[in-house]
Image (cartoon, rainbow, N blue to C red; front, side, top):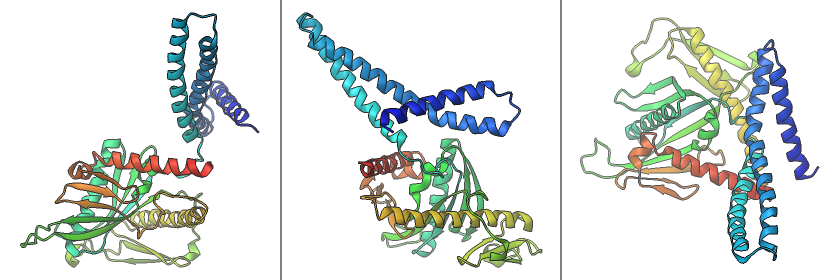
Length: 358
């Protein structure tokens, strides 16, 4: 099938979906939602195809006008100017269409679970982990997403040893998936009397929320322990065995959850995190396999990869994967300028995938 035939098929499918939706009596809500989702995904692609074909037709007409010696010089010059503009617009539309036609990551539209852990640097690393957690919370709010903390293990002085949150919204995973890796901070700790700059780190893992259909978890593969919840400093959060620790025996993944007073709720949250980790592990294994056949890749998914440095004395943030530096540290941490980094990472990934197609 030629490219034009494939594009024709996409237009026909969009029209078919429009007819199916208009003829639906609303009796099957799930089917209508499925059709609407596919229609919504196809619409920008079809609009781009239509723009491309309109411009191609316009260029053909303008080429004829510009080359027609029967027209006066002024008319031919005007046609040449319009032809140049139309060709530039066509190049832009063709670029957009190529991106729209790239294979989609099936997880892009999913909600995400984000885990942040303090790394090297003691209390300073934990304070930085808390800064990152708040950065993503503010970013989510700016996007109109819902941000729900799932578990927070604090140090008692404002730092987080570990924190997990679920983020709900449209295209959450697509926007945040390149945030996984080691984030490094360089700053003078408040407790440092000599004013020396310390380097600390925290790891971020962004995982797509996994449905049961995405990953099967067999009950016989789980060991579930319950215990009494502990708060910071060892004090009891409550006096019942409401905390839950789930061990997935085949993989060795362990998830503990104690933030809820109900054992049932803690187990449900722990299972959600476990399922996300298993799904993420499957995806990472595929990414490694695919990477062997790729010329370049943004963010290999390797959690040990140092991806970004936040330098407080210089007020800058540097993403090492694409050599991007922004002197907007405060605005990045406020979740305001994080978009600029994410947009650049997304563009780099698209460019790499387009190169692979070539």
